Image (cartoon, rainbow over the protein chains, first blue to last red):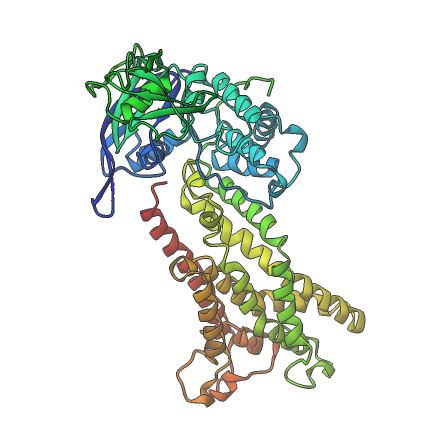
Length: 307
Length: 270
């Protein structure tokens, strides 16, 4: 199995008869391995992922996976057969057990040979550490266990393109670490597109990142390049606890003995006693979102090419 | 999470439409048959009707064919309303559970899922009717001997089943348009008007014609069952009319499913 060549060209999705442009003329090529997808609420991330999984048809533009056009009805099923999807709103049949649900999903994904299917279901259940509780009804599962069932169904067909939308929402810290470690191991020679609000999840797992804002690509490139966008613009400003916060994009707020320390983004020195600190990916993301960087051009990374 | 996914051979027979339909039917059956509401509503309506069997006195007949036909009539009179009511909410269940995107992302189109739901959930909802009918046949066999069994099975197939199939097909398709609540109200209204309000009330109705759904024509033509609305129309059903009545119900069921599949396929990106 080789990683797919996923090429998105001039992708536009509109709703309400064109009044709302959820995605606006997006073009990019996804590299192999983990790719992070960042963006504020309503930026168009979920719409983007729904198009990539064939759930939503674009208004215009094309999505090609190894040259097979996902926007064509006749070719779409071919692409779907090699794609795995974990949606943000993950629903499950509460009255089925995990193994029954996965068996059903495997059949819908075209694994009709019974022996192959049963083996595969057991394999993915073991992979997500649910083998011991495979015969419990899904309505008795915790949120974290349900997310694991979600990832298990997504990899049933050994997908070359795996798309996961907010997979760590609602998970406790330990579960979150397990989950992103699993995703990183799954990446291997496939493409995993990981959408999340949690910048740290992307920093820890994704060499490349795409940032969407207002339906457009605000940034695409290596994760390190996103951090460098805030170089020289990150400051620690300490103020008395009673003073109002500085009117600048703020990354963190840390209460202390001498006052409250704000980590802010500013192209100039915000206060005379402000202390300049080195930039992180989160700083770069906040700077990008507040348009603090001098220019908004795309920065292609070594394996992420703008078209 | 200590193991790494072992790659398997590519999925086999990836586009086997029938295998996917059977799979959908199997799991729809499992999920529906476990619902207590299915058993309570359907058995409850059968019990309600059969508590005082109609017409009075038919249970004392010595003719097994006639006896079984009138029992079948008592079964079919109310229970299809319950069958339709507990099936109607299965239609949009995937959307309600948040499963729509997940299912649409699979390479299986809407067809196997729709037919699987109709066959599986439909069979599950009819299961209480079958269980009650088998129980009745057991009781009648104990009273009158094994001769009741073949005629009982034939009566189920000819009188009860076609109407239930028709209601099942309507109940997994029409709620896409109307939603379950409006559909249930409509089904109740249709069932009373179309099968029980005979010509004596002076309003146009299919009751007493081959296009009703309570099996009066097969019962009358093949089992010498009691006639109600057909008699008011002055009709004694023939075998051909009984076949027409069954064929009409089955064709309507088929049409409802095929049209719904076409419409949903056009709408769906699957």
